[in-house]
Amino acid sequence: MHLHPVDRSDLARAWAVAEPWLARACARPGCDLSVADLHALVADEAALLVLIFGDDDAPIGAGVTQVRELAGGGRSCCVLAAGGTDVRRWREIMAQIEAGAARNGCERVEFVGRVGWAALLPDYRVDAYYVKHLGSAA
Image 1 (cartoon, rainbow, N blue to C red):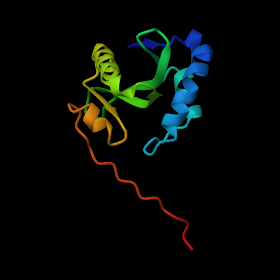
Image 2 (cartoon, rainbow, N blue to C red):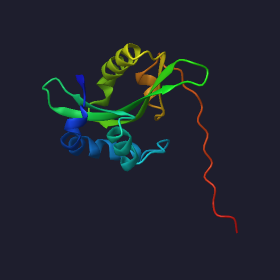
Image 3 (cartoon, rainbow, N blue to C red):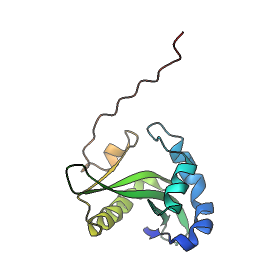
């Protein structure tokens, strides 16, 4: 498995491949971005689209990452959304994301995900994320 960062000149072609995976990721609890939001960030070069390829070099997933400056100094690589197949092997992909983040001066990688990620990525600290959906006041 390997990552392929998408150059802006290839965005239209790559987005057609990536969009279904990203749409499913955006539909999951905890993702506050839409596919349109992700596309705008990538088109504005505020985030990076990466395609994930399997051992046979066929695309098996996609993700969008963003480097953010931390308030206390330093940088963080945020995985805004990711989706695809063969998720049990994504530890390899996360290692590649971590290496890219380090090359870009990031001191950490972070993402919001389902609880199952804790078993796949035991070296990540899990923080609590609390949500209360508010109904309309009557």
